[in-house]
Length: 367
Image (cartoon, rainbow, N blue to C red; front, side, top):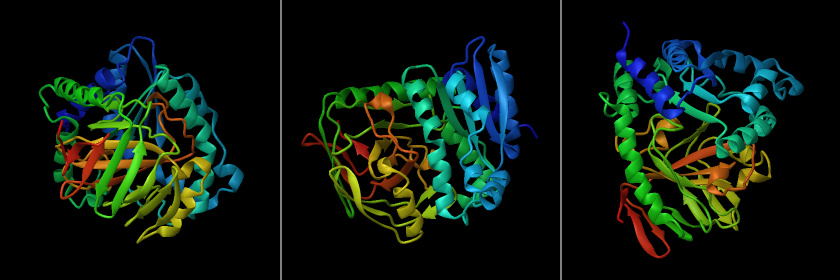
């Protein structure tokens, strides 16, 4: 049975998020199981006058690559991926697969090889995005695997996904435009500020945002969305942080993460589960031990952890940090092959101070 919400989501992605114009080239990435949404996006790009191309993805082929591929094969970058990064106008990535744990048992070192190989393309896309030459958006298609990770039935998860992506399903564009106005107010207040102090259970962390720009995310790059973020001054992080939720990367779930920073760099790291994977990832390259992002989640429609970072980093009442590559448009100059978001819930207890003023407390903005 066709779900009208798929068509509405495709319309939102094409006409609001990446705003396809006549003649523009658009790459659409998705696994076979996401075909209903991929096809709906393909249609909307055509109606907008663009040139869509579908690039199939598969966790099965990824698993085969890491299982049977030699190092030079794992590090090989195909010409199609490079062409998209260097010349395309937009990219839509659809999350959702048949098995989210397909890469769980891959040797971490092999994943690091691949991440390093992709670093150049990641840098190109970030630079083109900052210059306004490239638009991208990531969105979910609810699958049984994702529902299982979130500990819901597929029907429950479908309702959760579409409510989070389009809280006002009659006019989703107007909803995200309203959110954009509210977040613009917060970003305006943060202009010219210098010091961030984060206090939460097992967390006492200082960051500098001097000269940095806060960005408001209201559906332009992620659906669902809802966050404000910046790139902290690279050598400024000092203190410790504990992340409430598991951090998931390439199918590896790392829980109970503690990080200690000195002059911007992670100097101590531990985890209750999958600590080896955490440490190897931190050693991917020099930039992997520095912060590329500090953000506050604002989506009040996302209240629970689902093991999908597209949702979890937006949880209203949370903040997250990303180790690794930063976004140039914020002023960040940190470069890395990774960008790994880690989330901390502040609803029960936590404060964020900005230049000595209490800005955020127990998940609520106070200004």
